[in-house]
Length: 441
Image (tube, rainbow, N blue to C red; front, side):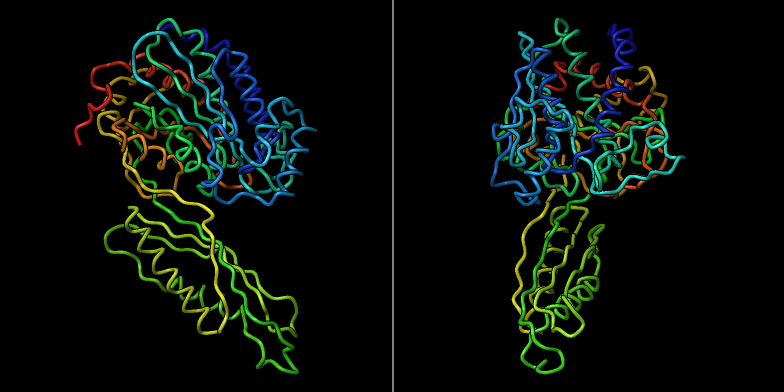
């Protein structure tokens, strides 16, 4: 593949895209500006572009902000330079973008997934933090690209440009999936249920960093935990704490007892398991028996089955705490991801082909350490269920601070390395070992 000069020529644009997305960070379901710029660039290049409800199933979205928050974010995006003609389709939090490139030659459908969203985090303004020092720190309060998704979106756009130049050498169909709301594992299921993955033969999701050294590429990360995110509300009866406390039903006590009980759930012997209450809010004043309380919690498991067991036990604790205080308990699913192992055939193929590519010093077949959770596993699961092959690649890079930290930043040299590697794999995608239904499991 003679893509080196093209990628080198693209470097200034990659830097500009990444820093622009970083500066205008948008969190899950409000990526209006980001998605509109992505859609505009893809259509300009000649891709068949689908957005909004075409690629997002409304009923499968999780953790969507309230309508007034969505409306405010849409107007902010418009003021910050969003491409206006795409906004009607994206409005309401339908911020997914999918682009297809037909090569005109028979071959597989090869899909690449990148994510769009930032975290709900206030970025550091310290002068030692490069984005602050060089003027591209987030201009949106409480939103920051602290996980590298600005880099992922840039990789997707870089691939899109490169594939146009390589079109005569490609076969089958290329599908580029720009997913919203990965943080909190809220967005993938809605794209799966919209059918975005149903025609995919080969699927590659990517991430930069994650503790992997610069120059190292992991062909199949296998450590992501299945997870369930729950928002819980306890509703009791408020009362005067001095005059008639016996007439109240204390929602705060129910929530507090639930929090302690949840953390007392034993860990699972069959594999890694986690539970955490991250938020407890209750009460209105010291002299009022609290009538409402809320919890935000998560369970995780090395397998989907372990996570389901943790969730079952968590719900039993929540119901029991509510019963003890005579209050009502309700919950809603705020996020969910299943676990899915990478396809061995695809991992082996990548491992055998990418050694020696520019910027790659070390190729690791699989990495199996339990870590966080990742929305792409839901997409991987759908592809594998339908007979395709799927994997999750990690491109190592130097980080200024850990993921989800207010001083997170990464070495932008990883962007051309990832683009070159992923484009190279597209040129090999019609190899017999990767054809649909070839997987031995």
